[in-house]
Image 1 (spheres, rainbow, N blue to C red):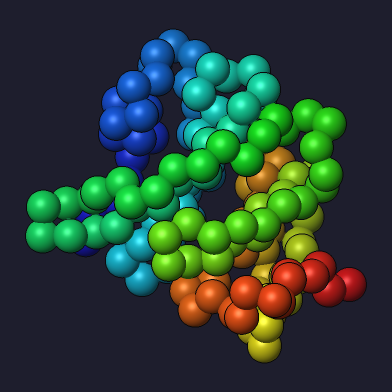
Image 2 (image 1 turned 135 degrees about the vertical axis):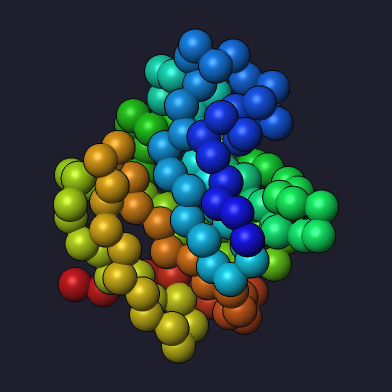
Length: 132
């Protein structure tokens, strides 16, 4: 399995390479979640799920999650068949995320973004929480 590249994500999304920036790519088995700032100013971030197939990486789902600035420090959702929790923090900050019975450690990258991926979505009535 090859890793997704920033260039491949930007090209597939149709964004202008001068402005778009990939904030994060995280993998879980043969799935990847990518956060892309399509115009480079943080006004609208896209959350995309990609799957590795015999044809290479295929985009399965895409959803806007809002702006980087001024939003809640974290948000969550589901794309195709994975659950995600994403947030902003100072680079290097460790966050513990619990969803259902699973707890994960997430570390904010150099862009100040962290993500927890859950390959088995908890019951729809369940909501993720941050564990301190």
